[in-house]
Image 1 (cartoon, rainbow, N blue to C red):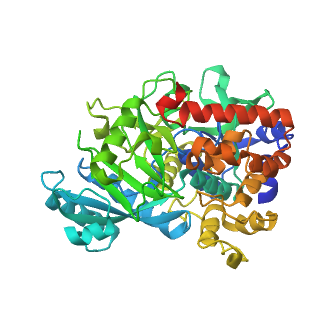
Image 2: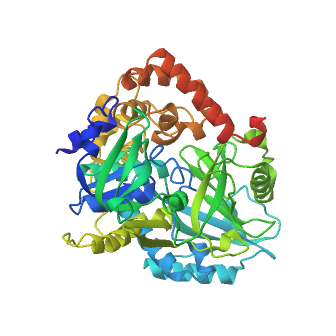
Image 3: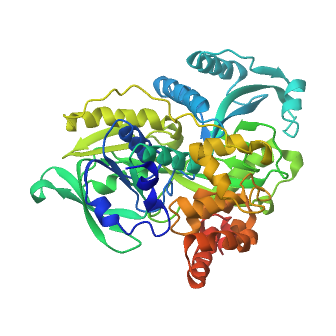
Length: 534
């Protein structure tokens, strides 16, 4: 089956043959449409396995659209002695920088060296020396106070002795998931959103897991899906498919503030240790805005409900901004949006959530292979580890599990000169070979950027036509990121978005009105400051 035909179920109305699709015999059924599940689907499909991924909500709905947007080697994990995780993360970061230009981009970090603040200069530089050795590079890291203030001119000057600079990377996390799924489908994989596993199928009713009952939210139909192996890649939700999970999960919430770039203008990321508890906090430029994060607290509310920042977390992040940027007089009135994600972390009983390890873990139970934990950066390494364990359950399957390039090389789209600066590489990174047809589908003025963002209007038309948009929130929060880049969830541009996307989606006026009301209510409840929810 061609890649185009394989992805036809992502187009509006493209699920008419869903029963036939789900009724096939699959080698691998992957449950969970975040970055971990997407990576497994890609690595399995490119090695010849018949692989299907199902996601109960939207792709990247859970943690993978609400991360800190950083692809990093985990410098802070060195302090916890997690050298293997840091080494693996550094290697995977460098692979993403090499294989996904325009989607994963270098990000410089600046850390002020203040009198009496930890970690001290010597400890930090020792960590960076190890970091550099793992990456096979050397660089100057320490700068005098005068030099450092030229790099970070708006930071606190009181007690500043100098500063440290180092390199990591950033990405659009939700678009990274979509690009991985796109690549997987080019290799014959199938990915379906809004298809939830209702229960597992077992041989003889109580034996080995051999598939799942999958319910389709759009039609309400329930389908029996048979697979030689089921992989549970649902992250913080991993223990929901187990009667007796082998590892205890500790859901941790990381919350963020989003400010206009003009209000907190940064040439590079600013990293600091919070004055209250010494935890690392950062602010960095991203897609036309500035992101501030993150918190690291136990998440005790229902995982089926979207996470949201609390007032305590808001105060915590604002205190960090006031301490680091005292002359900017920042307040909650400057915040465009907020977002919060729940990390899947293995509970080892540590009092401080930040000290819990970020390694991934796997276990098998009656034919169900579960993976959880890990980091956005290491999704490929996690996927290959899953396939090593899967090979035991798939004796007829033999394949080299050495890492492949993450994405196939893609040419820059034609007519790049017609695009705003940097957009050709940006589109190449996000869409690969599909960047050219995306541009060809654009209508008049749709190659302009949406004010306040780096998103083209044409990307919305493409998403509505080809990227499995089932609800307006999918379009605004994950296919694009307008919901966190623009005030009030982008309400001011919804009229033009409706003109572009309503015909593509095939929605009548009643459907659009209902979707818009539900989306704006979601923005107020989960992507705004707590005071806006009152």
